[in-house]
Length: 118
Length: 90
Image 1 (cartoon, rainbow over the protein chains, first blue to last red):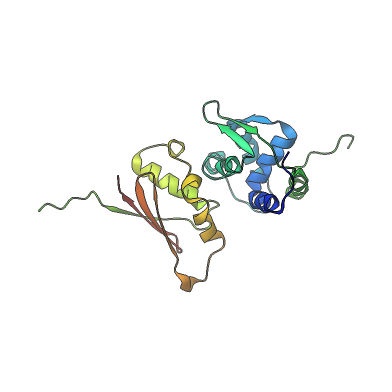
Image 2 (cartoon, rainbow over the protein chains, first blue to last red):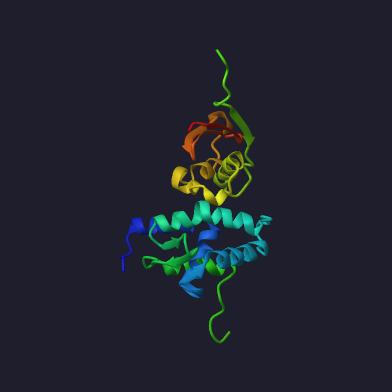
């Protein structure tokens, strides 16, 4: 488990800067460590479409493009995920001990799962 | 001496309000090549969010920033205004 360094934190904040990347990381750390690309993209598009803050009018095709070209490569480069092209599946490799930031952001982004018993 | 049109410049206007203009670049190249955008290398591997940065944190208009790079066989020039030029180089 990588220790929490300042540069590690800097990198994590850069990764968390985009809501799509926050959503992907939250999904992988809370829903399932491995997910099919299509499923993740559809889920993300669904959340994005209902997002109250910015009406982006984003189609799921646009979401898929953005994931493929920007967000998944960036997360893979940072060593957080592996995107297997053949099986089209995304797997969590680790979050370097920074799950607290992902969880905090998720509450503000509005998709944090309710705690058990709520 | 015959004039060839191999170095034709294709002009496109990028939507600078768009979430990820780097993706728009891939779409234009895919369109010019008659391919699907997901057949191309992810733009992130080439230009690492530089274009997104240019439009999401735009410098003052006087700066007139121009970004030039090669991606998927095209030499591409992107202006601060959103004007973009694509020249096939392979």
